[in-house]
Amino acid sequence: MRLRAALPPVLLVASALAGRAADAPDFVREVRPILAAHCFNCHGFDAGARKAGLRLDDRAAALLPAKSGARAIVPGHPESSELLLRV
Image 1 (cartoon, helix red, strand yellow):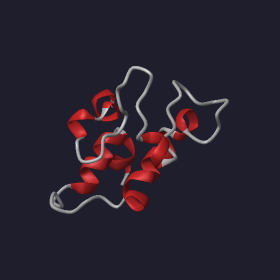
Image 2: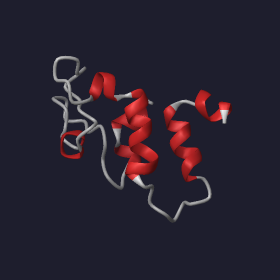
Image 3: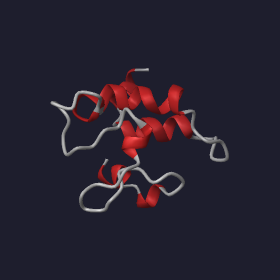
Image 4: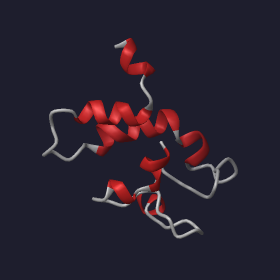
């Protein structure tokens, strides 16, 4: 279990989904806890602490385009999701 704690968030998500390529990830059980542990301090509900205007604790907000036009998350298209490209 210590090894999992040392993995970067994107690898934690990938390892949680290994062997389940046909199944969609369970956001509440598998993805949200990773975002809460690693992302919500700077990209959560507190507008005063939020960086780059990106809010990840709210689905609708997380799907909005940035000022640049890039989207942090593009459902169904991870290759177009800026969040995954940057992590």
